[in-house]
Length: 460
Length: 157
Image (cartoon, rainbow over all chains, first blue to last red; front, side):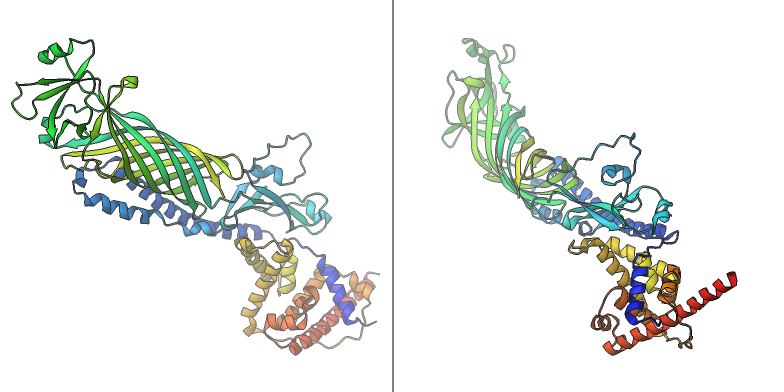
């Protein structure tokens, strides 16, 4: 009988279709080598970007924390502010490319079926990130044709290795077993798990409270210092808050803006009146049981004013129990002294409009990011009080205060997901004014603060 | 997948190279896998593409073997069905490259002649004639094997 075409075809189809030969030794090793080589190239690329980002971050941090006295020229701060945001936007193009890593299978043990002796305790299942999905796919068996062959050891470099394929664009992590035992029941297949990670929210709205410690660095001209009532100042804590809007530009980068209100209180311990040094004032003060401070005052444009390290305070309302004394022994400058009970506190209210770049350095359930940026700050409140607590009395306002200024921001962000959309965030941030809050020229006054912005974000 | 590569290659070494190239492609192109068809089908398609690519690169060097004289012996199907599968792979590998490609695509992958002509850049008529030539060669080679088997049997008795 001569073989008909369809018989011949059938014969080959049938016999060869079921033919799954064992690949020769060394193929897997070479595949892995080649993939490793590609991986190395990408790693180098990644390190390059990470290095550039780190240098940029450190440079900004240095600019913020170590402000040189160079910015006596006001233009400097403006230039800085304009260039910063452009530098912080680039994103690593390598992030978009898949990279392959070979991981030890024990990390993903529960996902790789294996014939374990029943006595061996299963490893604890690795927790999936919130919102992550997992599904299984069946990969064709790469080796092992028939019963006997499958039992044999396959020639592979190392046992129990899996390849983890990370596909940033699709938010996929794929675990491919390079070698594991075939799963029962499913002939000629390997089980692999495709993990779909939580899709990073593109937009993120946040509500935050920011308890902060605020203080300032000051510098003044010598003529101003002569009549300075007090050179001391002390930081105080204040509370602020606001909302933020963030946009994820890639898996790792986020740009955020928002609107925050914050109040900073700067305490100004006054020169206390002592019996020995200020005999005249003391005589006046001791008539009451209160402790008094002395402030040299002068008349400026129809109001009484006192010099402080934050600038000239115009006294709108002379506190109760205040006393006016003439200090005739002082030959220069202001020679009238206002005795006031208690210390000053200068209170500024700001609206802050930050623009920050965030780079995520750790992911997983908990995310950690670096933040840096600038903030445009509007001064919306400017008050001076005297005394403390319930005794506090409105005193006046600080003059020559800019309406607006810029500050540099550097910080860390930690976020922890509560559900698919909501996350708790804690963000320790330091900010430092890049220009002086006082615009008189006599006083350079740069507030800084360290705050912990904490709150809730909603991503969608 | 090694089996697929073996069918398209002229020998083991070429099959191995194709397999390696194929898997590297699988790993680096995984992001393009749309989960529409089966993963196996996708990997298989990559293996075939790699094999065809390498065939195209070598196309200039192709030549068609002269056909051997027909043997008068007629193999029966049962005897062929018992030939070792490695021998079947071997006869396919021994086909002239273009016949091998056409035969694999038509018989094993189920392509039609129009698809094959597109894939290999040949005319449909050429695809058809290549296929029948391939079958003829295979038939003859199987006959050779068949007679070998018969002779061996005779000697062993």
